[in-house]
Image (cartoon, rainbow, N blue to C red):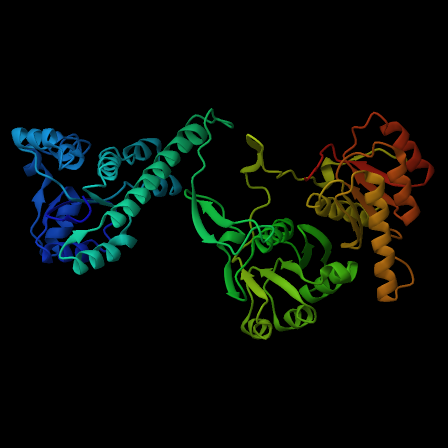
Length: 529
């Protein structure tokens, strides 16, 4: 069977948007409307004739509405294979009429959880009859159309108007696929609530992860790869995926990845003074704080003017004209900020390809959550790296303690190093990165590269000396040998922050003391791969 004439429709929705218009369109095609509770009331208030579900089944709605559609006259009407003689005979024998269209959206479980409802209210918002009807109709899509999303009402009405009240098999297939996705997502949210919120499990036996496709991307990390952006179907924190794109070309896979890295790092300065982050290939190449966003941007840019070209810029405060003018002096892929005034927007608009993303707020760096990584044959799941170290958490291990300025630079460098690919070494001075060494296979090379970058930056800027002179240096993991530390000494660093925990800690501490360094241990590692 291909085209099916709609003669009877069953409507039971929690979201009443578009319901009256749909009901009128169905009535115009002579469709009998069968409905439940509040849906029936809404249809009648729209002036439509409605048959109560209790009249169809011969049983009243009972148990506070928990039992109303779980009946053979409903599911028999949905599941019967119309061209099967045995099914047709059963329908005739038991007085079961065919139902050709089901319009259902489910109890607002996720919304109930999100508003902080109590356990009993949450349980009452687990829909039973709705998913049962959805699955029955979707399984029998050869004969029944199922609509679960008000956004699909218009397409359904257009199809009915174009074909004298009939639906095509292709339409019913699409609607069935969407219906099964809807029930899968619904059950996943319920399962997640029971596992994480109710039972307090960190890693449940089954991990539900239901995502909605937000957009298809031009390609993936490379042009031969396919890619799309998905967002969680249930309650979740906001980030790059929810940012408002004011202008510019569509974001690519790499744009999203780099923009996320920039946003996560600048969020560490949420609620602080002006801060700017410049990222290239998911690694920060310059980070700075300052008296204004413009000052912070110029300091971050000076750290590595070569890598900043074609990079991603993120700031922690509203953009103004002055900062926008500074940022548009070179080619930049993406600029991210909580907001931008009209003058700043007008300046960015001159760069047609530049993407301007406004987040409205910065994500909380201390928020909980999970990070997933695919491996051959499975996924690695871990909690987010939301670790934070404050001054009181540090242990001074050298004879000399850091000065107040060295301590501030240590904490700044440590914050940046958390977001640099391992092995990570970050030199910082006066709230600005002096050099960043990222992603090397040994810590010594990262220290050398960061120092070389600082010398190169000084040469390009015409400074008398690199900013590593008198800097603090952060290492994302312990120094396994003293050589990495000695490279930092050679670069001019006077203070060190690192996790500690190596079997050679005493050797490294002795080297620091001999060089007159101040060194603190965090007791926390920040590997990033």
